[in-house]
Each structure stands twice: as structure tokens, then as C-alpha cells.
Image (cartoon, rainbow, N blue to C red):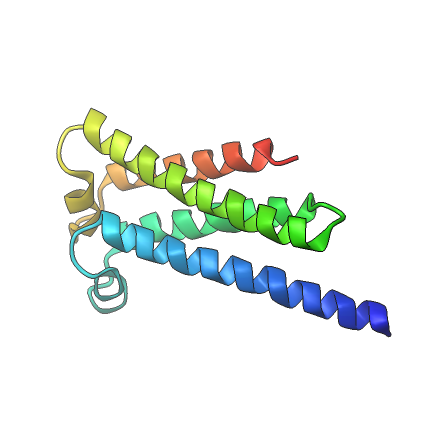
Length: 140
């Protein structure tokens, strides 16, 4: 019985770290794009903003999953590792977004909030997933 209770406690802790990282991902995408992200997605039904946010959430979820899956035997160290790799993933996704914005025509943030679907958003989303995959692969 104590194994179950211990497992529930660890799951709650890792879940809490994961939720905080997902919230930070939402805030990050909101900061990188003009306007209010919730309004763009839920009120204006902007597909571009939805694709970008979804890719960031899937990416950070993948990093958190990998970090938990390969966690250290020491619970505290595993929790800290999950948080650290998650934050690093978010930072690298933001840097990749800014670099992509610099090397491509137009302003990526403005394209993301444009109501017309734009292929550049898919490129940015793929970049998020690629960065997350790189971070995930580096966790060992």
C-alpha cells in the first residue's frame, strides 16, 4: 500500500512540474506573438495561433515525458531534472522562433495572428517539435 501512496505522491509532483511547464509554454507563445493568445484562439478561432501553441505544448510534453521516463533514482534529482530540461526546452524553442523570424521574410509573430492560414506557421511548429526532440534525445 505504501508503494501506491508513494507513487501517487511522485506522480502528483511530476504532474505539477509538467503543468507549470505547460503554463509557461502558453505564456511564452503569448509573449512571442502580438495580441492576446487566448482571444486569438478561443474567440477569433485563429488556426495559425492554435497550430503554434499546440506544437509548443506537444514539444514541452515530450520533454517532460522523456525526463520523467529517464528520471534519476533520486526523486528530488529527477524532479529538478524535469524542471530544468523543461525550462531549457522552452528557452530553446523561443530562441528558435526568434532565429526563424530573423532569417525569413515578414514578421513571424504577425503571421501567427493573421486570420488566414499561413504555411510559415507549420514551419515554426515543426521547429518547436524538432527542438523538443533534440532536447529529449539529450536527456540521459
